[in-house]
Length: 225
Length: 225
Image: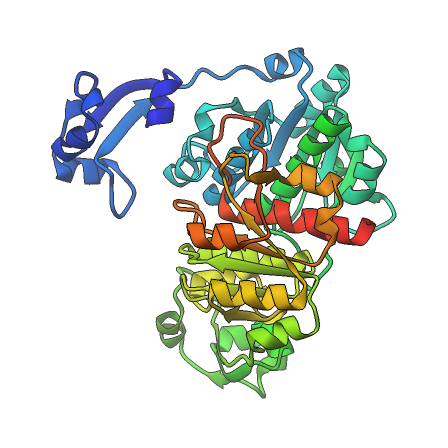
């Protein structure tokens, strides 16, 4: 709620008497509600007594790619709200310019909002079809790096790309679902297919962990090139 | 269940008739149970009809550090089972030798087991007090890297440590809770206090994302040094 207020995104604010004692600065802004009503409005087991109705103005895809961005994330059909929110938080931390979503769960799902820890209000998060993103990225001169668990000859190890200086370039990182990865046409249309090496016996990485490794590899390469 | 069987960790196996149709190779091994019993034994909303009772032999802390390990994870008071399981999965993927737990939630909690995606059966996961781990690491000549969100002069940026070659050395990475970080005595007793740079406006990273960045930075440094 603090991040939503800072982003000027709050339309209506409701608070319990207890919450107003803890946050007296909200008294002028909030309508007081009962503990029961706060619980009914909230999805959590132990609601904090503060509920905000928000509206966020998001840029369009062309606006995101107009000033060529340095680092953009595209998630295709993200199906776990916790993972989605965590990726938005990591993208924010890594200094990404925007998070694009091709389908998947609603980023304003309560679980996604909480997992984003406020980052949903820090950077643009918008829906965009994968092939539109690839076309816009090509026009903007931004390379598209599609992640895959496959180890065939057509894929690059992320460590090799780091060594070769490829990650220092402006990039859109594309992530699919844990179960099915990326649809083949999108994978083939990307500039590169990239895998994170698995050194142990795990079959794969969790989506949010994978995004953390990729985005921080780019953030480092772009700042230390 | 497949990973538990592969690790020879299964004491008893129960399966519904449907599950045995899907996995006929388990017929000799499993006792058939009803769908109702499978649901009662399982914690998930859509149980898969397979339940295994497992026993895992874990090494002791001295055994883990006897052959000097290359990469070890210590989690202090992990309180989220999903994060705990995800860190175990990432540690496995990054080729870590063991995951040590100083308190926190049970790694055999159903949610942690599922988030670990089988990795709980791939590497040792054991309880060990933080100060015992630090003493054993010192004796084994393994450096202790404690993560912190603090930016004071006493902390190192992970990118600087990568550049300086420090991450190529055998390491124990120590992670605290998201809310409170690491207890100060442990932080001060570590060889280094390390922070991941936050380039955007996020306050911090999710615990599992933080572990992914640190462990993969070490895995890369140790293999490309």
